[in-house]
Length: 250
Picture 1: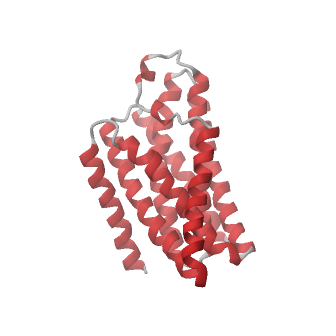
Picture 2: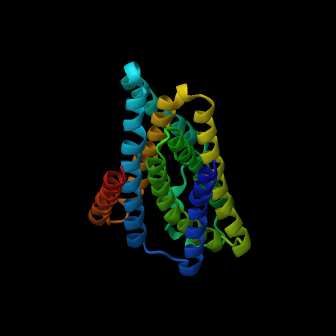
Picture 3: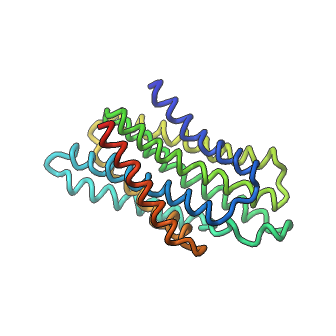
């Protein structure tokens, strides 16, 4: 349990680290952001497949394939529903909002809320990983999610400061998005601890949410500013880094 708590704090704390970096640099170039985010996407892709979906098949037994496929789609559909309830405002990052200090503040806060809501299933994925009993694999999954949270924390800062939000309130908002991830990690861990029967489905569900985030948000965002080639190779590097880590620690 102590390991789960430390991991939850680490995953949530990665957003805070990103926010601090965001304060230091305030304006991060699209190219740098796209490369870092693509690298994180590659790590998350590898973690979703190797750390969640493959174990789901293994733990599912006779009906493993059906359980895994069902879990993947249910996870993706749940996030799709969240996107419909919370407007997709990630395109605010890097837009001309920096040139308009009086931009609609409610949109900025809605953007931050969207990130917070999407952090919940990511946290659940980190917590569910511990339910399999494979601590090294769970830590790899959590590490991949934490890496993705750093650039996410970075991009929250500039739009909020440009909209006139004070640095202290901006930092608190960024920190709250990390707290959501901590809560999600604990929910995921306790859910599979209470009932091992749900473990295969929970693993696949978490994997499906991660695949959805990668395909629906991360890849389109990193390919929207003319850095497609670098972003693609960064994703492949991230995937291979996770793959190598999985083999060496497996």
